[in-house]
Length: 358
Ligand code: OGA
Ligand code: NI
Image 1: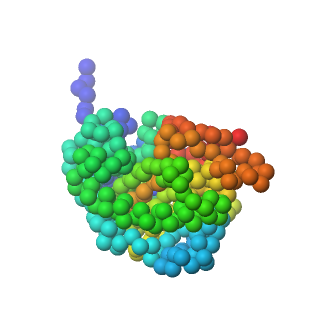
Image 2: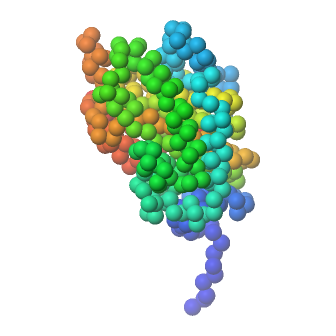
Image 3: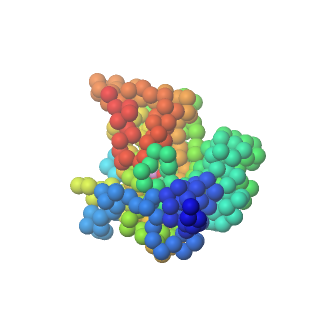
């Protein structure tokens, strides 16, 4: 029998093993200096971005929150959430230091050797609230996404201190804490337009009963035009607060199937409506499809905070939305079932919300 020659890492199974099981991530692949993208990451044509669909003259709203008591600010927030589902905020009160520190901490975490990051793979992690991985849902995906992430589900400060990676936990906790006020303000303003005038304990648990924070790393890609950083999706959150670095690459769905770039603005936060808020507002606020392109020359990071209902909450249109005889467009669903449905499939645009449609 002819001796088997050790193949270089081009075989699909080897790639998955190196990237996913060994903890190297796509960052490890990228740093090997690959000349061309492995097959496993090649997206079908229809999922690749076509530059003719990008609208460079369009922009999502930018809202200055320095006078957040001004009714005009509240009006712009609600208008943006209704018509765009996406906007950027500046002068939001979250300290620039906290933002810079969490970006630095993200680089620190991904800069760890694979053996250290491997400890946080799903099968090794000391806590089910801490998960390091690649792509979105590799088991369900035909083509993998060009992204590594660390996902942290917040339970309590003590639990986080005990189980989150020590290179980034303090900075992440500080960022979460320092963004609490603006999150609450945004939700209060958005609720007022729905005639929900008070966020009592019950509403608080529905709107913001749990939080997940992701540290995303999008390494340099040898063939960025053939793959995606993150495929088309809407978030399953109530609201997402996203911090991005200065590289760019996030695109939001515009009119007539177009895509609009979300330009990095130093010190800003990107806010978007998630499916849970679309459902609770009975469609008044809309979650919008978005995606991230891979980049051929620069590494990019982003840090979204997903503000979510508590997993065991049952979400559906708020009674306040139905008082005037408006029909419910969504059924009541257990939030954890909704999330499970999302993670059980590859990213597929706005399809997740069909799960809750009547
Ligand atoms: C996400 C997402 C965008 C980005 O993590 O859900 O859409 O810019 N991220 O990383
Ligand atoms: Ni998203």
